Image (cartoon, rainbow, N blue to C red; front, side, top):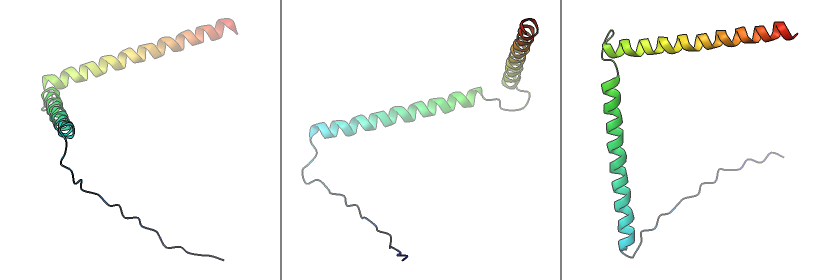
Length: 96
């Protein structure tokens, strides 16, 4: 027998406190507000930092520096891979 059930919805209710907030509760709200201001300030600082470091146009000095750094890292990693391969082949040829 195939029974289909209806979906059940539960309503959540909020209660408004009857007592005025205490000084401790007010302090908690002030702390949250000040923390939010700090986070917003850090976010703006990060965006400004990112904006100042990102290249504005192709061929800009920042673009050239980033490309050169990327290429240097690519060469370094490639050399390490080749050295590891050569060492592996040396061990494989002489010990087997």
